[in-house]
Amino acid sequence: MLLADIVKLLTATSVSSVANLDQHIENAGASDLMSDVLALTKPESVLLTGLCTPQVVRTAEMVDLKAIVFVRNKWPDAVTVKLADEMGLPLFSSPFPLYEACGLLYQAGLPGLLDRRDPNDHWLSVAAQDGRRSVQRTTGNSRGSL
Image 1 (cartoon, rainbow, N blue to C red):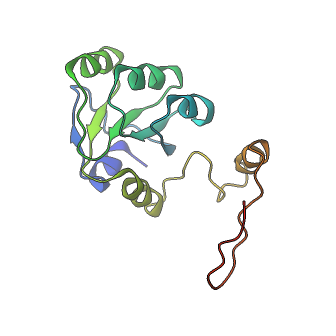
Image 2 (cartoon, one colour):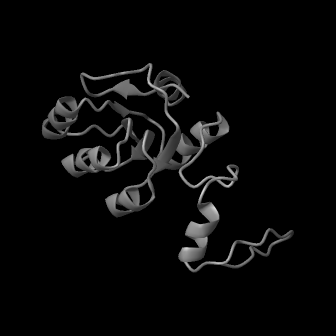
């Protein structure tokens, strides 16, 4: 999916002077924990987050992210924007909450970082390493177990 499509779907506004809307985005991920971004992010992805600190931009550089979208109309400070501009990293702000923004991108066909739809993805091995059993789908009021 093109970054321009993501920006349109999320009705996002450009925050930085860099846009690069014609670049192809492979996956999307969402987190406010940069340790999760470091551990689980794939290169050439877009990050959705509510965290607006320079650390987000530095983490994005380390894992080769293509763009960052801040949710809930959050806007990073000038130091964060300047750092992203120096790195050539596009920043955007979307009015959607994190959950809805992720849902819109997923519904439009952009895979998540751990996508069960992709047979080549490492979702099952990550879930196994996490020590959790898969959630059992059930009917009625029972929720299954982890």
